[in-house]
Length: 140
Image (tube, rainbow, N blue to C red; front, side, top):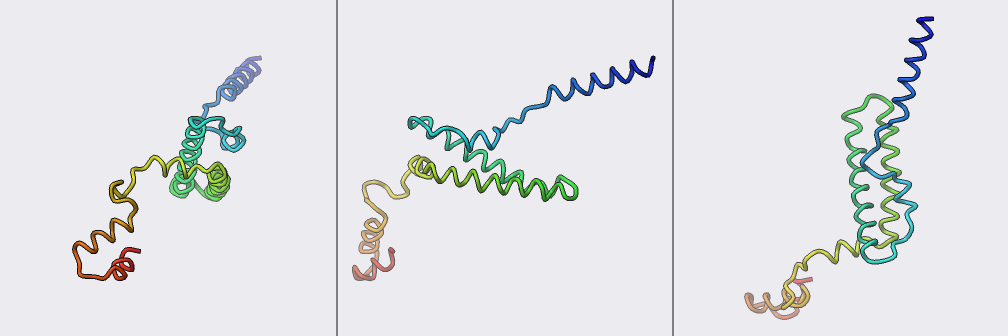
């Protein structure tokens, strides 16, 4: 009778532990891949940021698996992470997320100079004795 009570209590403890699994702070890759298309610019930026963050997480997971896990588990995790990276990157590119992050960067060339070639040409003519053709070749 004591053995049965111990066994029942052990089983209840195991089932209780399984019922309260820890949740990962990272979203499920499937939920990101199956997310509906964004309806406005803010949702677009948020979805792109989540995709970008998860790609970074998967890359970290892929690279650190070899240093922290034993045997064939490494290969399984690296394979899963590689597939996730490929799928997430495809979704990222399909949405056109590169445009979001490129638009947020400050231009490398001050606006008063126009584009890079114009600025380079002006500096080349100002500080050298090159012909316009030589300056253009040096600036491209």
